[in-house]
Every structure is written in structure tokens, then in C-alpha cells.
Amino acid sequence: MKLNLDWDNISHIKRIGELSKEPVVKKINVVMSPSFNGFHVRCNLKSKLSRLDIFRLRYKYNDDRRRLLRDILFRPFTPDILHKAKVINGIKCSEK
Image (cartoon, rainbow, N blue to C red):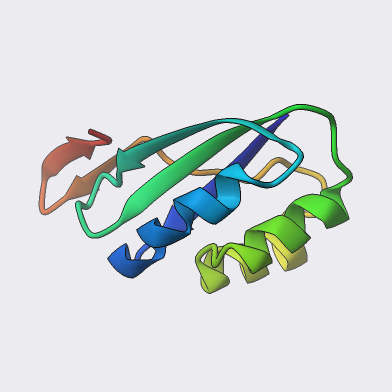
């Protein structure tokens, strides 16, 4: 099971230490977002969590609020989507 966070505000990176102390988090992978204006944080979890618990963790650790709201309202039965590549002004950008 995975937890994906989209941090557009670079100041959230200081919460990595707090996130690593969560009892359900096994491994954390941080990469630069495709638009280079923030970070994508991908956490491998030790056990399977309910969808509600995933949303609570995403809210607690400042996931992008628009993405969180969209996932709750419009994607009730699909996993949260975090794109690894994006096209900006005709140039394909990918995570680094």
C-alpha cells in the first residue's frame, strides 16, 4: 500500500522527519515534481489502511488541498493519482 503526497510549498519538506516517525510508514521516497515547483513524496506503508485513514494522513501532512478534495469528491473508488510526467509549454517534464 502506498501514500502519495503532493507538496507544492517547498517549506513542507521539513515535515519528512515527522512523517518517518508515523508507525505505518515503512519507506519514504522524495522526488522533485515535474513542474519543478515542489515535491512528490511517495511512502510505502507497512500495512493496508482504509481509504479514510489514507485521507487523514494526506490531510495531516499537507497534501495539495485541491487534489485531496478532488479525490474525495470525484474519485471515490479509484486510487489517488500523482503524475510522474507533465507537458509544460510543449516540453515534457518528468520527476527528478
